[in-house]
Image (cartoon, rainbow, N blue to C red; front, side, top):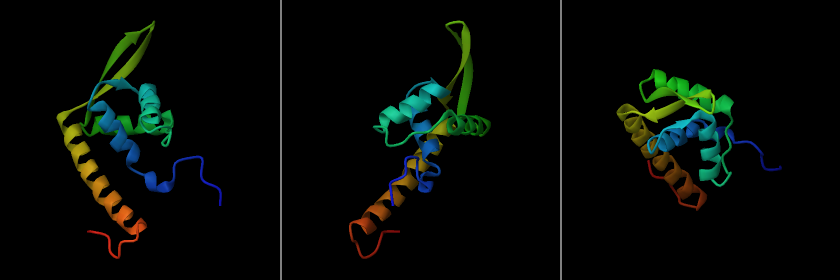
Length: 116
């Protein structure tokens, strides 16, 4: 079976984690996030605007992000920034991600039982 060119199904939730992580450092606009995710992951993870924008809108609705419009070269861009609630959510996502990756890594390496 040939490797997939797109992200596998188990990546559900990962774009949210990556978006929150990047926005916890500085404000960015949607397409900038698409590019930053690809660059930060060495092109291992590629998400399009069709993935990023719905997540941005949902996170903003949940109070995890704020947005502001800025004129740039004659057009308007919407920049997003993580709020305190977004940073708290990021911490929870990172903890859960670490728990899952530790368990999977243990199993892949041949451990008899993954940690719960």
